[in-house]
Length: 346
Image (cartoon, rainbow, N blue to C red; front, side, top):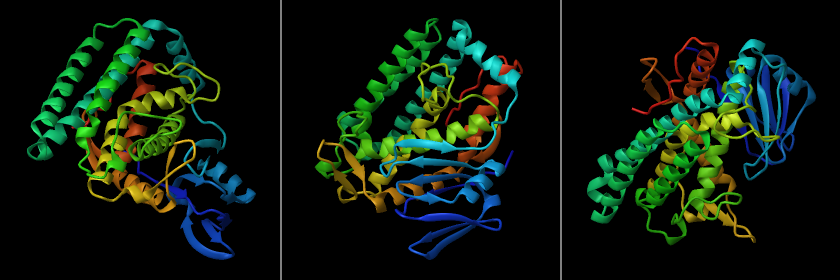
């Protein structure tokens, strides 16, 4: 198992990043604020107005360290990376599978089995850990939703059409997020969740979910590129110019564990309150600077937790699981595995 390296998130407006020997140095208004050895890094994520020197940019490209630029609100803007590694034969196998309806259905089915299983696990954990504190109505809703996810997961085995599989996934997401408010143990009306909303998020919970999904997509894209797969050519998500469809496919398995459950913890432990958000004129809700740092720290800590990988039967840090799943997908596409084994949270 390879070692998990660090991803550095730079959120300070006006920060100047440059290279000093083998170190990444951050300066703000001429004063040095941080210094990190480059050999410990695998990614650099810059939010807002962050400047990166050309020598550092070239150095990172040579070392395989991807630099990602996001807006201050977490919207992806661009990436800078070195030469793409990988086997052209693997990518050709990926393209053939993406164009083959039968192969595509097989991969998507297992991706969605992992997602629905992990959504169900989130509900089960809530019932196990906090069921006694929930009202009878909330307990009933969570149990019914869990049963519904089980039925939909069974239905996936009988779907032979990609659009039908997408429909089952949409039905599962609708039921899961309808039950999501019962997982929040907050009294503040400003923190109530009334359904998933995007572009822009309409409440604090959606703002945190969208932000975490962006971070997770960055990690999944890097994992796919590290094994030589093309992150733009997916199976569940349709091809679209500028969209990392395969990265979004891989994200689906990890949303419940690395994003949804983490968002719930941040609110339920009062690490985030309504004061950590600002409402824009058009109704969108954004994280304030300090709150964004809180989420980033929690995300990194979550990635350092160890977990048993069900298929590999080996413990690894959760942050390495996207790389493991990317490797398993590559092995399947090469013909080394009979099917793609999804990530199951246990």
